Image: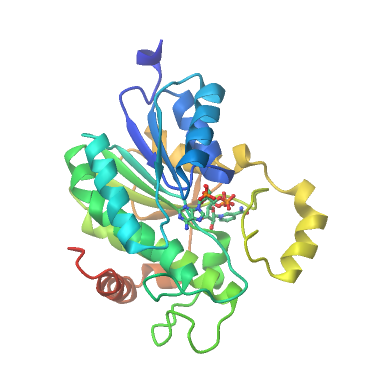
Length: 288
Ligand SMILES: NC(=O)c1ccc[n+]([C@@H]2O[C@H](COP(=O)([O-])OP(=O)(O)OC[C@H]3O[C@@H](n4cnc5c(N)ncnc54)[C@H](OP(=O)(O)O)[C@@H]3O)[C@@H](O)[C@H]2O)c1
């Protein structure tokens, strides 16, 4: 039975698969036969989520990994664990992300939104890139947001040290996701590995709950029932990760399974190359 499913034989890693959009993406991809690895900060919580995903998908091939991805040392440790566990890796879904109303420094001394939403996927992808290339055809899907359209990369203050705003930091990080994707797509031309980014819609999850802006608390109470369910929010990430329609498609931003023009900065190759260089410097030691 499993051999007839479209993702049978494929190995997928989804960061942040313990809840929200990531967990729903994991259920969707496990249901069509993929071996799925999920990550979260706490191993016990990740194991519980993996058990839920096995039950919901009917697929026993779900593995749990733990790493606090705000820490570059933890991202590096996670990459080693993934390379040990998976001799082949066909899809990486960079889904982890968050919003913080106030500025929080990470153990590396970086601002948390930029560190978790952009530098963590940047570093993890680079550490797994050779394995993805060796497993080609392979795909990197990065979960951005509609907020990317309002983003601006403040190269003079990427860490929001001067005047932090949660919304500005989030918009910047989600634009960085699309810029990273487009630059990655260019660097991967001819390798059989594609890179796409996605706005999943506005989805009812735990997003932003750790340090929520007051207006989000008010708005989310009112509009929460109208938001997409996690399963609905996962539809485009699942499509990008698995559909034959996406074979060879790279360097595009998707909303509701359709390509959409992103922030024009994301197509400025000087800017995307600059962000890549600055990011490589901030994750020192990565051969990126
Ligand atoms: N929800 C929306 O409306 C919406 C809209 C547009 C874009 N997005 C994007 O969609 C993605 C997923 O969001 P979501 O709404 O599903 O969020 P969520 O419900 O808050 O889930 C976040 C996931 O990331 C994990 N996580 C959080 N902090 C982490 C850390 N420091 N290290 C490792 N893992 C961590 C969480 O696992 P643990 O708590 O178990 O560690 C959880 O699995 C994000 O990139 C977000 O920007 C969401």
